Amino acid sequence: QRKLTANSLLSVCFVLSALTALPQPFLIGNSTLHLTDSQRGNRRITAEVYYPASAQGRDVPVAGGDGSKFPVLCFGHGYLLPGKAYRNIWEGVVPAGYIVVFPKKEKGMFPSHRQLAEDLAFVLNHFRLAGKQEGSLFYERISETNCCMGHSMGGGSAVLAAGMDPTIGALALLAPYDTHPSAI
Image (cartoon, rainbow, N blue to C red; front, side, top):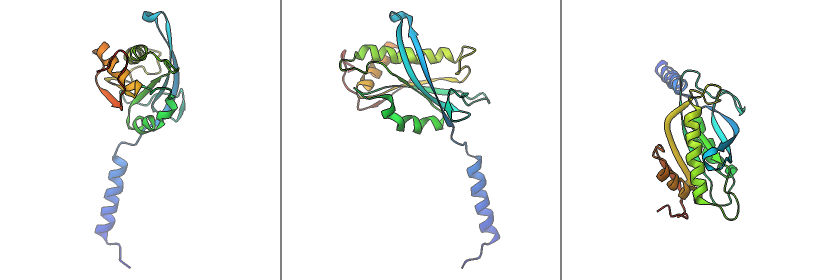
């Protein structure tokens, strides 16, 4: 048996205090938004949103009462894949301080890649505005930093969206598919 020396005890206390001083992960809030794009014939877009929250659950307040603002990641789904297929994405990034949005359109057998791209750009713009709109769940919680993400068809559509909207700050693609019109 080894004796715990004063230096060992001090080292353990230092490590434990350093760990508690590190930022702790955020809890995950969730909300469903029903948006209308008046520029495209009042197209209705339902989007599932996962965000850093002050408590776990649906429609709970967004974290950041200290003035924190969070980047928005808008994720385009793959062909015939529901947003829930990407649980690993939101469970990985929301606790680190990101808002992840999954538009729920273009899910049928013959999706329009252009429509999905326009949905992604529209949703990102909606969040830019919601961050400045009193009464919004996301008022003063949206960073200027954003990213259009996607998998397969959604990845190709994310590229199209970035070509349509110069305010999209970054792309993150998972096996992007060459869309129609071409994302290349």
